[in-house]
Amino acid sequence: MLGGKTLVARALETALAAERLTRVVVSSEHPEILALARSYGDEYALQRPEEISRDTSMAIEFVHHALGALEGAGEPRFDAVAIVQPSSPLTRPSDIDATIELLETSGAESCVTVAKIEQSIHPYKLKTLRGDQLVPYFEDERGRMAQHQLPPLYARNGSVYATRRDVINRGKVLGDDCRAVVMPREYSVDINDEIDLQFAEFLVERHPNLAAPNKVHF
Image 1 (cartoon, rainbow, N blue to C red):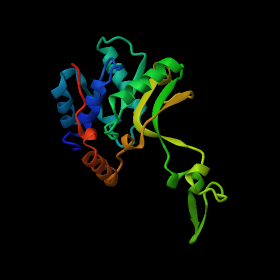
Image 2 (cartoon, helix red, strand yellow):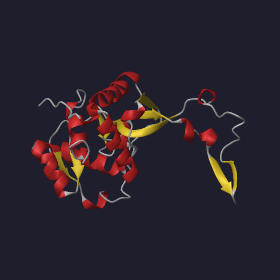
Image 3 (tube, rainbow, N blue to C red):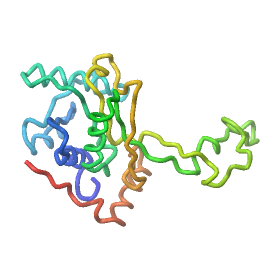
Image 4 (tube, rainbow, N blue to C red):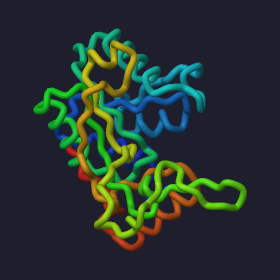
């Protein structure tokens, strides 16, 4: 739960509120998650096979399954796929729309959301230990310690991945020509452990607008 909603509900409502998605499904093998999706409408629940629902399963597997299931049931062929992850609960509908719009207008194979890397984990500052001696992992900082001395770098924040169908057909989620939509740090929480969840809870408590339910148009 986060801000009075489950992470899955937040992701589903965010996707439903986006204007550039033509079809939304929740792919899962878990009965409770599928029941939640059906509470919004039967068409939003997609049963995922157990064999592609393991911790080691790849995203391309559930994407292929979803396309096959929907198109096999008679739905029109999809030109592109967007993945919206419940583990990025502060994603906004506008982030989804901006990513899809960039995919459409840029001619790129894929588009993703990114966040700027903070100064403390900039690659120039990364170290390793040789015994108890701290040594550069990539290269010496050469005195470049202040933020203005470091080139801006970005990392995928896990919020939105949008990819053209031909890339999916080649067995990839991201194509070679990949463009980026930069999201603010406060919306770029990626929940991988308990500390990440606690940080998301802190942000929602301090900023009530982050907890507000997305406006969904049916």
